[in-house]
Length: 474
Image (cartoon, rainbow, N blue to C red; front, side):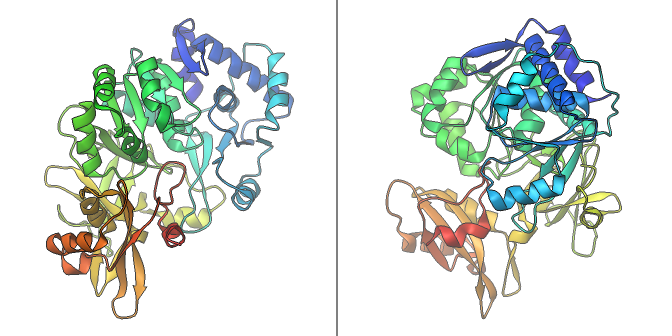
């Protein structure tokens, strides 16, 4: 089985049903199928064969979907590129992946014109589940960006798990505002849509000033977001929030830690407890809070079916429940390796287990909690400090809208924690904030400095880029 076989459940059995809303137009599943078939013929006419790469540098659009599906059907390896990337990052990805074609807004009109004249039917390309489907590059915040090889099976297992775990069906109405170049929207969003046969409205981007109006107009039952989106949605007037909440079935958050305070504030405002889950570029989805049962604040829940998780110390020994260590994963969702980086692939696995680089702990009743990236760990005077613990406390304070904590070199202690604060509605009394930290946190965890900034540096999915925090304070 390959992804086309799975998508055909929607393309053929629901060919006349509404599939996609894009910029005021509605397309059926049959029309989406035909559009991507025509695009596949256009790519074939340009010489594309199975295993070739196509890199795409586009914002969300129906053209993005057409080209992605055409690649899936031909066995062409799809390389989505972050539209925020500039020359240095683009050059690395293009030289590494060596695409036959790099599609940008400039190239798109010609490709559209070539596809328009092509047949609407397409013969199936022989592919198995282990065939590469996409080459998704990591963010590269701790080194050169690497291409994770995601197979047809990786995507299929992931979508099947999420449909079952989150009760997604053809009756859902799905609002997707995440960027399709990221695995969150590509691996979860598009695949859950096509596997379930639900109706999806795609937005070019999330605009918080227009978000409430989009919810009220489309009346979705399902929404995938990142924490910054939910922070922005907290500005929704209470009556509007309750009206949106009445029609919703499920809000899901991922791609960055969801502060427990945001979860609680959102529940009070919208009447829904956000479901937080945990995934990575290399593994798509790993762990999720339950649909039925406790969605525990600060926790990402339980491993999904088929996913094995273990927490090991620096000696490679499993740690007891309640203690922290690095999270290792194994399962059919785990990628095939890094593109042309055998050394990086070897170092990423130990006895078949993928080293996530995330620090975690497991509760006695099985819930997993992420404590931060291994690279974010602050060691101060011999004590381990996990920035997320301090960030969670700071986010509970009424004058703090957003917070991030990072290590700063110190000649006596090696490193000390420093807090970067985005104030809520004006000034922030950092002395009062420091006093509260000293009352509630161990002395070695208290930030040595509190730096007020207008905003935190984030990537396209809202994850704080801690290596840029110093520049944000300038």
